[in-house]
Length: 623
Image 1: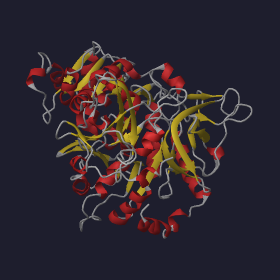
Image 2 (image 1 turned 180 degrees about the vertical axis):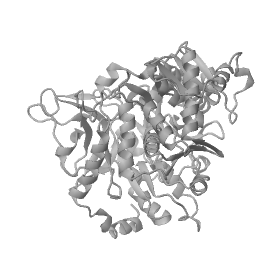
Image 3 (image 1 turned 90 degrees about the horizontal axis):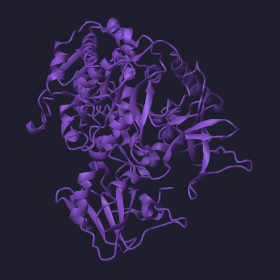
C-alpha cells in the first residue's frame, strides 16, 4: 500500500469507532424490513408497481437521455406489453427470456411479464454461440423478447432452442438489414396498438410472494453460468432493506449504468428506487467521460458501483468541479481501501455502503459504519445466519474437527463465508432459492456442517474478519477471476479453446495487473510434439468463442503442464509468476486487439495493450 494512503488511513480513526450495539441497531432495522413480506402473501412485484403508480403517478420513474417516463406511464406501457404477450399465448408461471440492453423497454417488458405472472429470464447481451444457447435452454423459456441490438448474437448462434422470438426495434443500434425477417415488426406493432388500461389481476391472483419472478444468471465458477431463481418476495425485500439502509426517499435519483441483466442493477437499484418512489436515470452503458456530467445534469443522489468503475473515475484528471455534485451515497462491492480513501478525499464525504453477497446468496454483509475497506460487520453472531468456516487452500477442503464437523474461523483467519439455510413456511429470510438445475443447487449446499442434519449455502468466497467483527473480502475459492466488471470461469474459457489445433493442454488462470482491480486472464498453452503455437489463429479462436473480457490477455507457451500429484491442473505457481518474463523461460505473448493477434512480450506490446510491466510486489500480496 502507498505510504501516503496508509498514513491518511491511520490518521482517520474516528470513522472506525462505532460500538457493536450501534451497528447492531442498524442491522436490526434491516432485518425488520426484510421480514415485511411473508412467503405466502398474495403479493407480487406487479402489485408493488401498480400501488406506486397510483401513489406516485405523476412523478418521474425513468429518465433515459431526454426521455422521461412517470410512474403512471411506465405502468401503462407495462400493461401494453402484458396484453400483447397474453394474446400470443404466454401465461402465468411460464418463462420469457429478455435480451435487451439498458433502455426503457427493458422495464416495460419486465414489468409487463410481472403483471402477467410470468417469469422473466435476463440474458447477458454480450454472449452468443454455445453460452447463449445454454442460457435459453437453462431457463426453459417459451419465448424471448429480443432487442434489435442483440439480433446479431442470436443470428450467429447455431442450435438455439425453437422458441418464439419477439423483436423490439432499437433506433440507436439497428441490426443489419439482412438479419431482419418478414414479420419481425409484428410484436412491436401489437404493443403499440395494445390497451394501456389496467391489466387484470386474475392471471396472477393465486401467485404467492415466494413464487419465482426472475431468473438471473450467475457468473459460473465451473462450466457455464447457472440461472438463479429470484422470488417476488426476495426481490421486493431487497428494496425494503436498502431503503432503510440508505434512508432513500422519493426525492432521490438513482443512477443505473450497470447492465440490467446483472443482479446489482436489477435488484439493488430498481427494487430500492421503486420502494422509495424515487427516479432511476438509465444509461445504456457506463461512460467514464459522461459519469459526472450525468450526475450533475440529472441531480443523481444514489449510485450503484463496482470497484473497477471507481478506479476508472479516479484515474481521470482532477478538475475544479470534482465536488460539485449531489451524490450523497454509493452502494456496491469491490472498492479497495486505497480507492475508497482517494474517492472521499477527491469527491467529498459520499457515504459508501460496501457489501458482500451474490445473486443466489441466502446471507449477506453490508458495511453500515463507513469502515474503510470492510464489506460488513457481525457484532453478534446469534443475530445472523452467516458463518465463516476454516478452509485449507492447499488441499482445497474445509478443515474439520475429530467428529467431522466444520470449524469456525477466529479473527484474522481466512475462511469461506456460508449461510445457514432456513426452511420454514412463514420465514423468507435465510432461504436458498437455488437454480433451475437441481444438481447445481445441491452442489452449493453444505450438509452436516456443525450438527447432523443442518444445511448451509456455500458462497465459494474467502473472507476474514478483525477483532471488532468487521469483515474483508479476500478472494474466490477455485479458479474464477474478475476482470472488467465480469466474473470469468477458467473452466469455461479452457473448454471454449480446448480444440485449438495442436494444443496438448490449455490452463487458464487469472493474474494481477498493477493499477487494475481484479485479475486478467492468462493462458498456459502446452503444444503437442511437432506443432507450433500460432498467435494469430489463437487470437481468432478467442474472438470466435469468447466475449472479449474473457479472452486471455497473456499467453505463455509452456513445455509441460503444471500438475498436482493427483493430476489436477496446478495454478498457484503460475499465478504467482504472472506475466513476469524474469520468472520463467517460456515464450510469452501479449494480446493486441489492434493487430488481431498476440505479440511477443515487449515493453512496446504492453504499451499497445495499455498494460503496465509486471510488479512482483503485487503478486506477493496474494494468498
